[in-house]
Image (cartoon, rainbow, N blue to C red):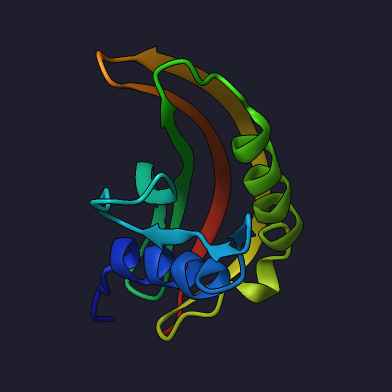
Length: 143
């Protein structure tokens, strides 16, 4: 069996699942694998951990933790967690079904909520609120 790149496919799957479906204050929220310029609200997707659960000549099964980092950049006197919470609620309502993660070379028989944490930071010009959702995924390569 030829080994495929599970990283690329799982991130594309989450991107396709969320892109264009998350809206805050009348504007579509950016979803991607890079931090965007000139966006005050966005969702950053990345692989936090990947483990080969089973790899044989016939099978490749991976445990993949995908992080969805929801960020809101506000004026320095900000600190309103409303934008992050609203975006987070929309994301959580979409990502809980493993059948919605469509990939070419892999199946996702199991996806479940792992955990969530939050953080805030203040720079000279901005107040940055971040909440990260971790999704645990069992990914099986199709022959």
